[in-house]
Image (tube, rainbow, N blue to C red):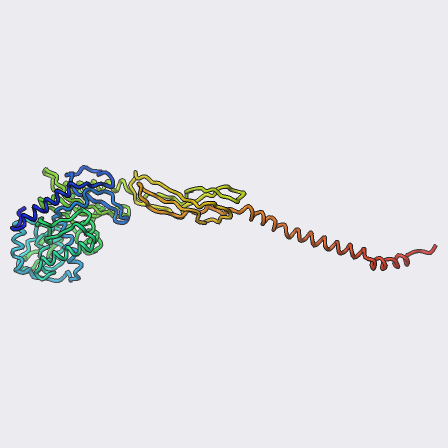
Length: 441
């Protein structure tokens, strides 16, 4: 690559910064499962649904990013609100820019000054064959010829997405000097692109036909530079979608992609692959396939806490039938997790648990950790009813009350009857009847 006049010093300074960053320690969530083409490659793989980082090697190291720069250019075009069916005329002011692109041997779609072309055609040219002239034309159009202002917009949008180590200096990445980012930052930009339906439609297209125009009497067919989405490629994976390839001599091979497996979405960024040999250009796609295959085989939805299984027991006081209560989790805890990740459950139960206890009463909690990281804290519930011995005894007594009342009523009745029969009035009434009934001698 030839450095533009006046940029050699910036290139040297950037290279020094990269060397310093490379010396900084970098850890990985899990050991790298594949053999990389270069020990200083940046690799960043995470679950887009949970935010869990699976692999992390040099992900915050600033480095050259080549044509992955074009993700931001495409994003700004799509967010501009411009009608993509608008036809524009490529202006004379891009003459030098096109000449510089050719001097750098940059990929292009052979645009010509004065050519009438639609924005949508330029967008396909930007993302499929990674045409640098398409990037410059789009940047020029959106800023009325002020490409440096477009670059400022790129940096502002990156900052808004949370990028902290990104500095764009051109809309295409062909000029390495000062045009740097990190794997983590590119993942943030790629996530914004993935959320844009038009971006994904374009990025997942294998070939596209550019209509004939005033400078080209015949249609042009352009093809994607991404072999991982091509069913005819040995690197094809049907789980992969998007995002962007990149290469310059200084940047090495770069690739940003997303994949979906068993309902989970993954983001993978690889920067700086530099495998030597005849298969050098494709080695980064071998790495991509190997990393994704590893993730899909080792990660799955695991039930870390099963609400149908007892989670703990706790001492129970004041109950004749049981001296402990069985506790169950209020809900399952399911997580897309590494197969060998260690699961730990820490339970906390209430002090001095006494009957009565009702089924579903909250009597404690359980904290679930995965490889030492807290995943969830869930309530612990009583599995059934536990009666109070005191209350139960009282209820037994209450059951006897009707019988006791009946007995008391009967005793009262007979007592009143006996008293009435034993009274003097009753005796006087009985005497005449006895005399009247006596026979004479």
